[in-house]
Amino acid sequence: MMRRLASVALLFGLWLASAAADDTVSLDARDWHAVRSDNFRIVSVLGEARTIELLRQLEIMHASVGATLNGALIASGTPIVIVAVDDHDDYASLGAPPQSAGFFISDLRESAILIEDSEDTSGVRVMLHEYAHYLNRQAGRIRYPRWFEEGNAEYLSHSRIRKQAYEYALASEQHLYALETFDWLPLTDLFEVSDTTAFDELGGGMYYAQSWLLVHYLRSLPDADLNIPGQLRRYTELASDGTPARRAFETAFGLEIEQLERTLRAYFDERAFASRTLPANTALPGFSPKVRAMTRPEVQLVLARMAFRFENFDHAERLYTALLADEELRALAEAGLGRIAGQRGDLDAAARHFETAIHLMAWDFTIWMDYAQFWAQRLPLSESYEARKHNADRLIESLDSALTIADATPEVNSLMGFAHLARGGDLNAAIEYLEAAAAQAPHDQASRLLLANAYLYDGRLEHAIATAESVVRFEHEPNFVTEAANEIISQARGARRP
Image 1 (spheres, one colour):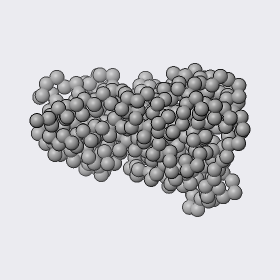
Image 2 (image 1 turned 90 degrees about the horizontal axis):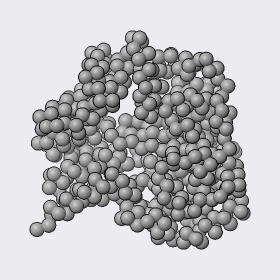
Image 3 (image 1 turned 60 degrees about the vertical axis):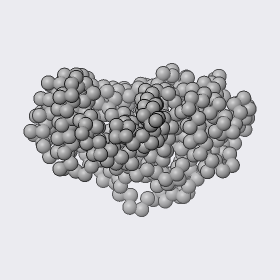
């Protein structure tokens, strides 16, 4: 399944030396705490007091900003897991890009945030930046252009809490220094960037500084909160039709690029960056986080899953293998090793691990979902109808077993629709499941592409076109997703001609 990856590059001037942790002690052997509030769970090596403070800041941002961001948030039935470390080497060892200090990963099962909170980074700001990516994802019915995605996350996360208010849109000293000292990127270059991981430290610092400045300026304009959602939708419509990014921006926002570059220089030189405040009960009535110390096997499981998210399979394998000695968590470790073997193409080893996991803990929902993902990955590799039907049947059986344990999730509905579509013979069932997945997670393009295909096969040509067009609109730039969606549109339009 597709997943959304969004990272924040370190701001220029941050030194990436390791924190003062004892490097003779492995990360999983240190003291970890799990701290839970009404909305979030942080697994942390930072110590109890610091972790509670991070959680409090996050709850205040959630309560104050979440309800006001670009329209109503889409309800999410998937949990958010936050892992916090205090050493950059430990952060990077899990697989996160070493030029970053925070990373947001999301799929149909869960959202995860990894942050570094050390002497060299502000864990609060990094965490709030990554959470802003989550808010953007849940508020938007489109995929934001990268300059807005990152600039808006910086705009929201430079904040403080005082006088019963959440104050944000504060000027960033790092951004101001970068903008004062180094050459600016042309705005046309800024608009073209879709992957920030290729930047070096200086280039990344300037990209984030200029994106922050541009968003700060746009949000300072009259009626910005009312206008920006529509402007972003218009930008997406134009860009998805092949309009170059510069012209799409000028048309959607009504701003000419050369003039805007001069305006941004003046806006920066004035240094009159107005902050914004929202009422916030900083005492957070009812905020009584639950704290517990974690066992080493529990920590190993958390870190293995995080490494797997980053496709750092070697590190995840070492942690899962260490977990095999733990009686309570062995089944989950076997399932994790099964996923890794499946990703590496060792299907026999994957099957053995999953069979062991199910034998040990057949009542665990996540094990059945891991097993379902294994069969889903095999479906596109099926070399015959019989093999495809066999793999689809096994996928459905795994999902049926999961549904005896818990209610359907977006992941269950999407995979079930995929299985019925691949198996053939029951398009109505495929459509029903995929419609449910698309309604639950409108940002998930895989489910929507499958749904458009199902409509096409079922002869619902207008539905196929509309759904595929919504995929193209969401993406706003050409890629393999838009190519597949445009192919569906072409086939549907061809089929409806007399």
